[in-house]
Length: 176
Image (cartoon, rainbow, N blue to C red; front, side):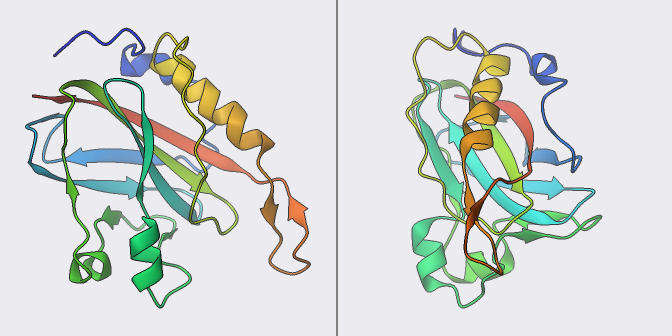
């Protein structure tokens, strides 16, 4: 596993916001080759809308689920709705039918996947650039947690922008 200075061990992220008890699993394993297909299993204690964000070995963030293309092709408003106690697998069968898959791409090294569960319906995030000064996985998660606390989402009834409850889980993986 290449040494990536902005990452710390997974245990460092303990104590971060996770009121929905979100749990993320990378499949088939946490060591993958460039070009291999990966899926993700997510469980939660509370319902919510799932966003998966990849932070590559160089610290670049990208939302990998749901993608804008997948949302444009989808006829459902709840394409990313996680139900409590029911494993949500990405890619979903509907996403696979539309050609969605996650294929590991360079750069090699240690990367992370962040599962973000929103209490309110959210499907896309305009992700900020990850500051280069972040020194570790815990700091990256703290940064995302603080950033989402500032976000406001439309209320389903009034349409007014309101605060939201976010839950996170983060897993490191190694790209060869």
